[in-house]
Length: 162
Image (tube, rainbow, N blue to C red; front, side, top):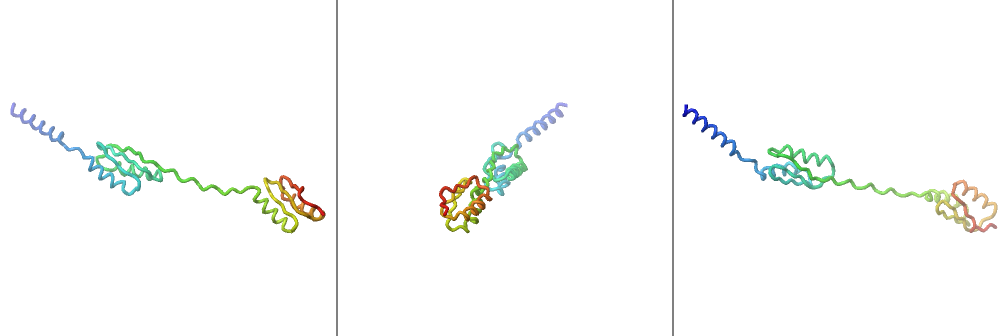
């Protein structure tokens, strides 16, 4: 009876030591495998400490960030993943070309004034300033054409009427 008890105890102790002496996965092996897993994603690096993989770097999209984390999670013996990857924001859109109300008004005024060689019209903040010389009948025609453009004001103080 004692022999059986002694034999069983020795086997149990031996089994316990065999299980307890199992080597833990080395961080260097995990590091090598994790680095290979994220190698396809530029700008991402992996660091391992006690089986915990820390990802760092920058990527351009959230999909790349998630892809790197999932790739490392699938590595054998990884306990957890700390994802410190930052996503760079997209560049701001190009500033739209500012088109002022004066631009379209200037174009329309140029079309009207081309038939009146002695007259010059300047556009500023929607106000038309008329200068030069013109006959009274032609001034009335010009004035109606300029008013049809709907400016804020037509200032003809600098115009000499013959």
